Image (tube, rainbow, N blue to C red; front, top):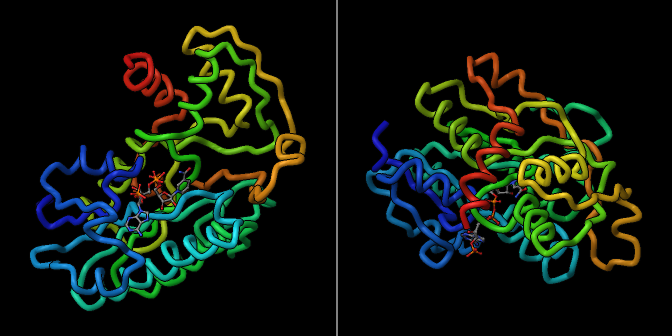
Length: 285
Ligand SMILES: NC(=O)c1ccc[n+]([C@@H]2O[C@H](COP(=O)([O-])OP(=O)(O)OC[C@H]3O[C@@H](n4cnc5c(N)ncnc54)[C@H](OP(=O)(O)O)[C@@H]3O)[C@@H](O)[C@H]2O)c1
């Protein structure tokens, strides 16, 4: 694949950084160069020689999105911003790779296929679902639905690792179940779809392995890192009690990977990638 024909949007986010690492020859922009919420900035951008736009930009502050100010930002970026990109892709005959979220579902089903109907619980989830609907109007798109993303940036694994280093015995939610998705795995899957020119459409991507709770993941982080800290299981309700502006979260975030696996893609387990991540990213700091 000719990397110079790829445009990466949101280059400084967790996924953006991994994409830049994987596609060093691609054109990559941050929010200052290309603010997707700004219609004029998106339409006036120079797309000459670009064939594929990978949108790693999003408003991802799930709890802040519940505030009146955050709600506007979430909708401006995740819905109106995506609409701007869709228009630019249509006008310039580009393929759009866009990232969706498990939060477009309410999590009452224990395994989410790509065609499950939307049932978002939160403002963030609703704004992402709106983005998905707009992307699906394009003739050439890959809508990648993922969950619990871990890369270079602030994320759950890093937070738990830092707490353990400080000697904290954390209380961690034990009734939300899912699988981590390392950005290395996400980019590997995106590259798989693009290089094989598979059928356009929606694809679930997460690491494989047994679905588990955040509390179980924390225990795994601690054991792999040699920490003896205790983890106390708490329910989502107990964890967020007396906290303001907290977004409701799906209790089940497990994405069904059958469609991806039918293409021949072999997923890495979250346990394998967690071990590498802890070795390479955190223990070396
Ligand atoms: N994180 C998760 O657990 C998770 C789970 C499921 C799905 N996802 C989806 O996966 C994708 C990647 O997530 P991530 O964790 O890599 O996100 P992230 O680390 O929060 O990065 C998002 C990036 O978007 C940029 N951005 C924000 N507003 C923008 C705008 N108006 N124009 C251009 N860029 C803008 C941000 O730039 P600044 O830093 O300059 O604001 C940031 O670099 C997103 O679509 C997200 O919804 C994430």
